[in-house]
Structure formats: structure tokens, C-alpha cells
Image (cartoon, rainbow, N blue to C red; front, side, top):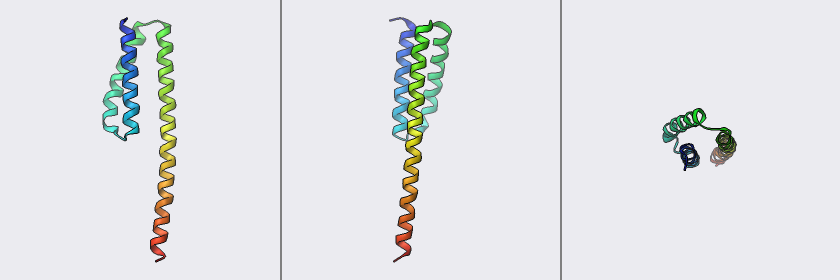
Length: 95
């Protein structure tokens, strides 16, 4: 396997790990993985052709979509949580 293909595979694995950490609310480890991911992206973009850049763009787009979906889900969960808290407060006051 060519060097940049190995780097792309590592990049994909790191992106999956970041996504899993976000899903598990383990945000402390993300910064380190993101730094490593950015380093790999820089190495690939300096050394590879357009086909790998297209693959990187697809991975980045998928990551952006996943992040946007997670942010939307977090907002929805927070909204639902706040509504639930208000109901609990209302019921506790009405006793």
C-alpha cells in the first residue's frame, strides 16, 4: 500500500474514533486525536495527487455532516431536558 493510502486509512480510523468519542460524551480525548488528524491531513496534502485529495474532501464532508447532526441532536436533547425539568418543577410546586 502506498504511504498516502496508509495515511488515509489512519485518517479514517481517527475520524471514526472522534465520532465515537463524541457519541459517548468523552470530549477530553478529542483534542489529541484532532491534532493528529490535522497533522496527517497536512502530510497528505503536501505529498499526494488529486484522487487522495478527493477522498480527504469526502471524509471531511462526512465528518462535518456528522458533527452538524450531533449538534442538532444535542440541542434537541437539551430542549427536551429543559421541558422535562420545568414539568417536574411545576408538579413539585403544585403538591
